[in-house]
Amino acid sequence: MKNSKRLLGIAGEAIAENYLSGKGFKILAKNFTSAYGEIDIICEKEDCYYFFEVKSRLNDEHIKPFESVNDKKIRKISNTMEFFFQRNPEFSYDKDRKIKIISITFSQALHSFISCIKDSNDIDYKKIREGEDYNIGILDVFI
Image (cartoon, rainbow, N blue to C red; front, top):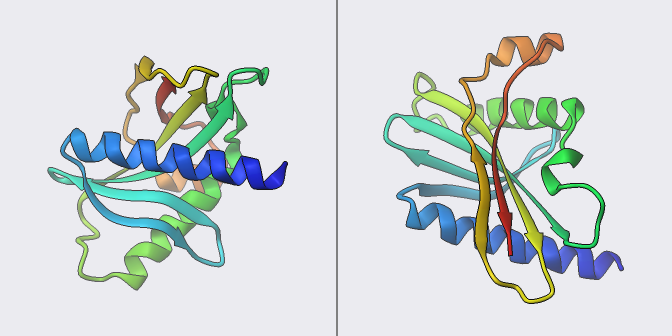
């Protein structure tokens, strides 16, 4: 069971990476880890850095993949993002930064289409650390 979930996650991340590359995102890092957590895909496009959390599920599960990303996970991503900039000073700390969730649902037939796209507002990372509200962009894909 655990192995099949991992394979589903790997497939979802590959689909997300392919999608992002096709949309003009430059992939900077994949599976970047720190003591705080992991960021699945880190990209750059125009004057903004994007930090993607990829969630994959099978169609028979009762929640959408993005619904499993809670406040604690967002804080982990935010802290890992800060560590990324400390570890990689060649990237401009002054550019805009956005956290995005790519939500992938696999059907039995594995046909791909995008079911909805919700763009995020800029996230105030200070508010995340203080536990205030924030908006997260979601790309929800059904395959």
